[in-house]
Length: 305
Figure 1 (cartoon, rainbow, N blue to C red):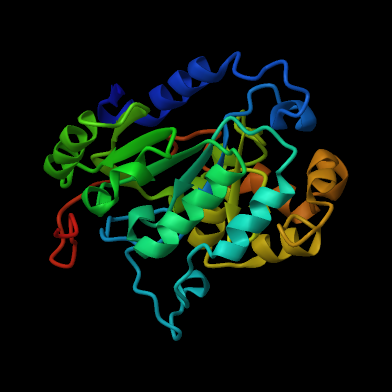
Figure 2: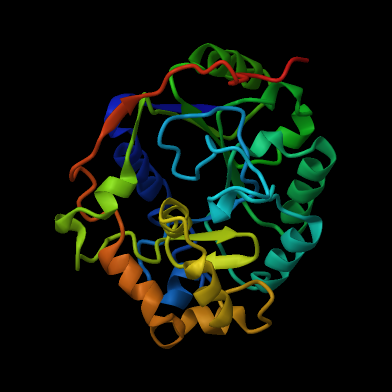
């Protein structure tokens, strides 16, 4: 088991550098590599949001998991519980059957909160199609997942919010006995008001080096950048999703790969405008309100055995 630790507030940038280093030459000669098909030389991975609920209630959560799910919610993205289905997982693998992807990274919400039967069934589908899968988790239910199931993940990334570090240490000890993949610990002691950063003047009309390098899949829809679902959620809007669905950026499109290859023609103007004028990544540090993550009364750090 290889373990990499990213301490402090620069964790994400260090994490991306390491991932790029690990994958610099991986499958670089494969003509089916997704980066080659799209013409994106620094392609990192596909991020797959497999649910929208979490055991923690962190301040300024990018995916608004601190806001309760309710059909009457004023927040359009928090009106229903969402989680990947066996049908969706199968459809994704069928669409990308002939495409080589460095890694598909499961995220949430909190992925280990997915019902055990479904969790096991979905990873089996990805494995059956020969897809490499990683998982980003705060460790909530990891100790209850069968060892043979965890071995099916190429990488396990722990999101350490400090309040859950003791439990992550227990998870690491558990994995040492049998896991042979890559383990990374990404320390995030603070969250930021990225909605404030999105609206900052220094982030208007700027391009981003992460464009098309981290594609995100969320409830059948394929986003050309992993921050886009969060941008939509923080804006309390569903328009990005709707525009992409209508333009064929969905797993339900039989010609999805061709649609993605021709992204310069198929991406709606609204989506490109949002990338240029409503993203926090070009000037990540602009006008941010920083808040230390604290333990809440309704937080559940881990699921008891």
